[in-house]
Amino acid sequence: MKGLLLAVAGLTAALLGSASAADKLDPSCSGCHALAKPADTSLDRLLTRKGPDLWYAGSKFKKEWLVAWLQDPKPIRPAGYPYFKTVKKGDKNDVPDPSKIAAHPKLKKADAEAAAEALMALKAPADLVPAGIFKGDMKGARMGSLAFVKFRGCVACHQGDKGEGGLSGPRLTDAGVRLQADFIAAYTADPQRFDPHIWMPTSNLKDQDIQRLTAFLVQLSQGDK
Amino acid sequence: MKTQMSAVLAGLALLLAPSTSQADQSIEQVYEVYCVQCHGLQRNGTGVNVPALSVKPRDHTDAKSMSDTPDDELFKAIKEGGLAVNKSVLMPTWGHVLSEDQIKGLVKYLRQVCKCGK
Image (spheres, each protein chain N blue to C red):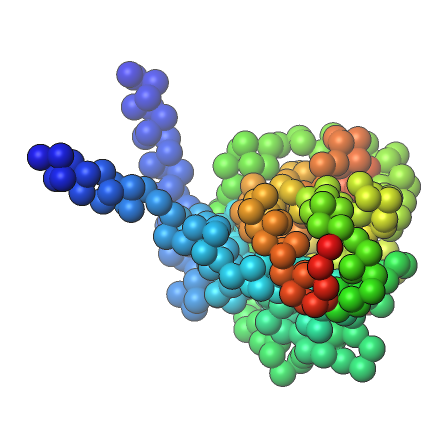
């Protein structure tokens, strides 16, 4: 019983903690981004969403990147978000429709620093992004590159090395600067644990694949070239 | 008493049911979210990702090639990915994201798109 009470108290403290962190963000952020884990996990919610969820931002992003990006936000998803509302028919294939892709607000330095601080306090539960899930072995990066481009087909939706790749998923050319390694590994293993209906498939990858892909991605730092 | 109990149980079932069941979701919306990125708005294999693909995605409007593919193979390709039906790895496995009913619905939908049956 005592254990249960402690668990409830811990959970409440965690929820209050993230709620107060979310409160420090400009109210306009929540117009497009979920800053707390949404109760509605239906596909309908995904269809009406305007921006990616940020309720686990503190376990996803690197703070320095957030501070810089919020002052000079360049699109992370080349085809817009959600892509199926921001593409149009082109001559040979569908293309992003710039008129439908809204620019992210630009923040001043002090505001960007405050927002990054608040976002970094929005942590994922420990079992969602387990610390140390990426074991840090960088020797797998070369095989990870081959898996990304060839064997696992990640390149179909994501731009990786040299900016080559598809447009419907987030650009990963700067993944190592933008994202935390443990997040890359956890999300790649099962995106639907983060976002039940997200259009990135779970590819039944073995841990060795996850380790190699993560090693490949964390060394990408080309920015938006 | 029996009627009251039934009403209570029915009310409880309504409360417990998710607001929108997967079966209610328009299968066309499911296609828009997951398939359009490669198979395209026109369903003819011209999605926004196509320039990055080494293998052209299936043209779902092509009655000839689609009618050569039986329903169970389409189901397997969607659920387990291209490799499961000796096709490209670029067609991913959707079995973890979509329910069996949604995949069955997509197979039916593909038959409408290609205006062909098998």
